[in-house]
Each structure stands twice: as structure tokens, then as C-alpha cells.
Image 1 (cartoon, helix red, strand yellow):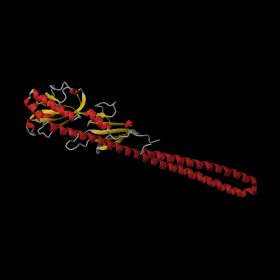
Image 2: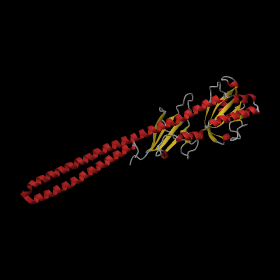
Image 3: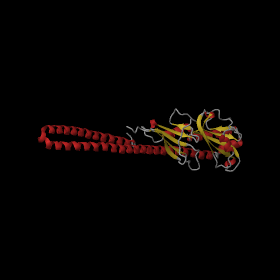
Image 4: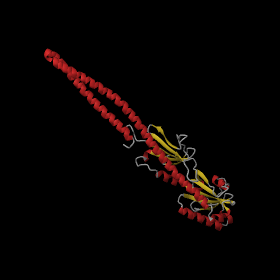
Length: 347
């Protein structure tokens, strides 16, 4: 048995021990009463010689009846106290377990936030890379090849990305960090993609775009979230926009790593489901392989609480925490959610 369920188990053990003791007392008093009745009968047969003994037998009978009443009353009083203790223990189980799940959910979404914050820094920094500015300015095949080579070097050091693209102002991709892996990328037009359109409208080099989790066709339908920033002439902060850099986070592998890193015990993990869900309560990562990207989750959040828990059924509890953001990254309303079947508290 695992704490805090042990409290309920102990209350049940106390009840069982007390009931057994009371049952033994009542059995003894029944036997005593029967012996007293038999003694009274024998005393009556003895006439005057048995009168003194009959007084003692009557007193023994009265005492056994009083003990029986006391035992019955003790049983009733004990049952009330045990029921209250059991109810308090159940509530404590839900409070302790629920708060722990909420705390773990917060830790989970905080790790995601900090991870994505770093992506917002990366995209703005790499937007100023001289090779990208040169490729977008000169448009020569040599400069585009060099830009792709430069992006490949970056990808070798940053394993959290699927690919990095550079698109000119018309939306045509002129450089890719992994052209050998994703052969359809260079030359593709992304003018209608949100990450491209938003970055082209940025008024400062401090701005960035962070996208939702999607399956990207040009990356073999891999799950990714795109981050983008404007590339500006002469790598200035306010100079004209000459293109866009898009970096594609390896969402599935990185999210799975975060879910696996949540500190659940080996006993807890099989009865737990860990999820990251978006602001529309759709699954974007899950420890349950039966759940697919985009599936809706019923979430019972409390309007005034950014973190908390709900009891979904007798032994199923759901902890959650809304993204707090990190530094200049405000988050996108995503939530960490953990559902867990509690160990039996009736044993």
C-alpha cells in the first residue's frame, strides 16, 4: 500500500480490530448470561439453601446485560468515527495526489516553455548570420549553397531541429540545412505559410513568430512547430526585410523526451497518462500512443486557477497547469496535463 492511501487502510484495520474485539466481548457476555440463568434455575430448585446463590447469579446476569449494551453502543460510536476518518482519508488522498499531479504538470509545461524560449532566441540570432544576408542579397548559386552549408553546420550542433530554411521575399526557399534529407524543400514556395507571412511584417529585428504544432509536408509530415524571423539587409534591426528564416523544432522527439522525464515512479507510470495540449484542448503530445495529434481532451480547469486538479471518477484524477511562459516568451496557452488512476483506497 502506498501513502497517503495507507491512512484509509489503517482506519479500516482499526474498524476490523475493534469489531472483532466487540464481537468477542458480546460472545462472552452471552455465555455469562446463559450461565447466570442456569444458576438461577438451579438455585430455585435448591429452595432456601439456594437463595444466597440466586442473588449472586442475578447480579452476574445484570452485569452481563450492561456489558452487552455498552459493547453495542461502542460499536455504533466507533462506526461513526471510522466513517468520518475514512472520508477525511479519502479527501486527503485526492488532495495530496491531485496537488502532486498539478505540480508535475507545471514542471512539465515549464520545461516546454523554456525550451521554446530558446528557439525564439535562436531564430533572431541566426537571422543576422552573414551567409544568409549574403545569399538573399546576391542571389548567386554559390552564396545559396554556402548558406545551406552554414545551416547544416548549425544543425549538427543543435539536435533539436528538423531543418532550417531561408526564403526570399517572394516566399521561395533558397537555402536548407538538410537538402539531402528533405529534397523537396529548396525551390518550394512558402508565401502562404503563417510563419513566412508574419515574419515579413515584422518591424524590428527583436520580433519573432512562434507557430502551433503541425505536420509539415515538406519535412515528410513530421510533427514540428515553426519559429521565424525577418532577415534584414546588412543584418540591421530596422533595415529593410529581404527574406525570412524559418527554424523547425523537432516537436515529437523533444516533447516525448519531456514526458518521459517527468518524475513518476515505476509503479505510477503505467496508470498515468501525460499530455501537452494546446489552447483548444487538443493533444499535441501524449505518453499514450493510442492518442493522436489533434484529439480533443475533456479538461476540467478552474477559471480562477492556472494550476489545479479535478476528480474525474471514483479513482481517476486529473492534474493540470497552464503555460506560465518564460522571459520574453509568453507561451501560447498550452497546458501540461496528467491523468492518473489512483491505487485502490478501499483495500
